[in-house]
Image 1 (cartoon, rainbow, N blue to C red):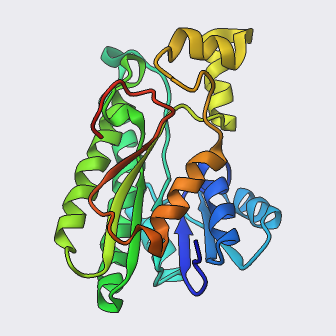
Image 2 (image 1 turned 90 degrees about the vertical axis):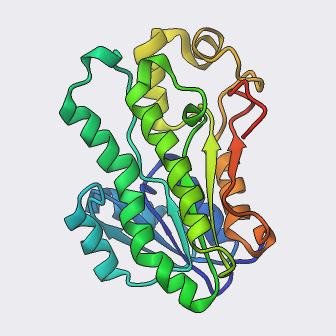
Length: 252
């Protein structure tokens, strides 16, 4: 997979899946832009990476933050919409503001950036847009209905955008990770099963996870890198699972 000469923006890439994706794209030869809300976190992530990398700090959950980012980075070849939040909360206790916060962060951040960058990709005849969704998009978790809602919305948006740029050389796809061992998920596990750790979480909370363990960030990044490359030229409008078999469905 050779991404030499391509510029890739990975949102929410100061840690976890986003950071692993930035690392994998760099190894494939891309110029990578790390993005996050905190300048400190962005600087720390850039310092850990080896290659042609820079950072932009902006809160893309807001229209103002998205404008700030695109003003600093007017054009990219690869857009990885990875920015997202999650958390467990009983569905009837989620107030309007929290529903809106999840939608703005997980959905509108990707919509705003795609709306800016995709027409420019079409003009050049090549581009890759990747929404990092989740197995929760097809297997709604009872404890995170608001999160699952945003992940399902991403699938519809990615498919619709792929249709809108049909035949242009620009592809739009969703990647669906399953439970992945990131720093945030480690904290989530502690909240759910205490000191039981990864094994107890998989046994009690994700019994359909066929791997029998949590996914590692680099395993998700491998699929994202493939989708970002020329090798995936015939894949568009798709929802591609890297969920360890968690979702008990055949499609996607």
